[in-house]
Amino acid sequence: MGELTAIRKQFEYYRDLGSRAFAQISKDQLFWRYNEESNSVAIIVKHLHGNMMSRWTDFLTSDGEKE
Image (cartoon, rainbow, N blue to C red):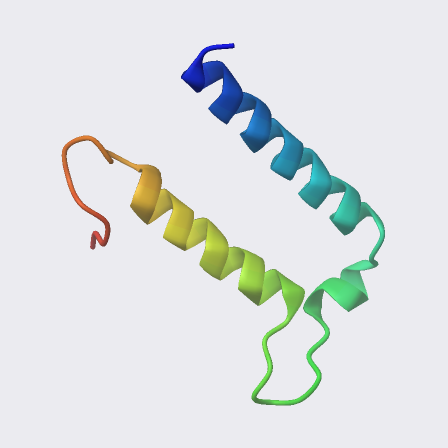
């Protein structure tokens, strides 16, 4: 198995794992926060999305953080 194929399989595994996790919670649970200082699942996922977009967009030509 080539390296790119292995990376794609791992991505698909984690994408499926995340989808199955989301299927187990309601919309209310997605946005629930323990207290004012806590983040909801939705906010954590939003932050992860932004971080991954920054890290994986143009990763061959630029390094990490982008505006």
